[in-house]
Image (cartoon, rainbow, N blue to C red):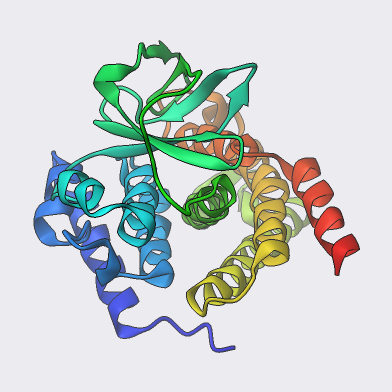
Length: 306
């Protein structure tokens, strides 16, 4: 396996970073620039992960992940009518995968999505937003909602909840890589410039060791992400690899987020400070679609079957 980024990945990442650094309307500009392509098949798993890493670095609250997962599902499994109706530039789509007694909860981009892919049993249905009574959910960051679902919409033939969960989970890992990479960079820079007792705090052994551990954790998130992404891009089974990547995104992401806050001291708990944005993003991503323990259980079940 060669995890060197392709030219397309590098160009997409650079364009995404440029837009996020300069745009007041990032979603519209991501669509206009082609980062969100009209044809979902134009970019594969590796390219989408490269974009998500940049979104994580900027902690950008754009509906890229749910839209691209839903759009790629419709491109592969949707009927001709479903594709022609919903695969249009700028259309925001989402996925409703978390079930709580018949209610779909923490549905991403709930207030802006025009349609949802909703899991029910072993099937997935395409449901227009207008057919649902969506209630907003208050999050520390992001846009989510919930709705009751007992059926309805159009069946997406051949599409399974596992297909969606695998790709959405992988996208969360890519986003978490960006979050932790940038959080570590900010923390290392702070440790170089913050002086206590006439020395930069990064020169103290305990702080240096903490940052070294965070560096290793970020490297583990990166390695397991690209391993899982490569297997999916090659059409190989990636059940174990995605669970491993999500474990590291959750477990190591937790440690990196807390390191960033602790090294920053009092400023780390200031909600107006950048580091707090990265802390909350890392914590939300840690638990979305299953935290570290849930991934170990999933990995254990997969290994038992092999």
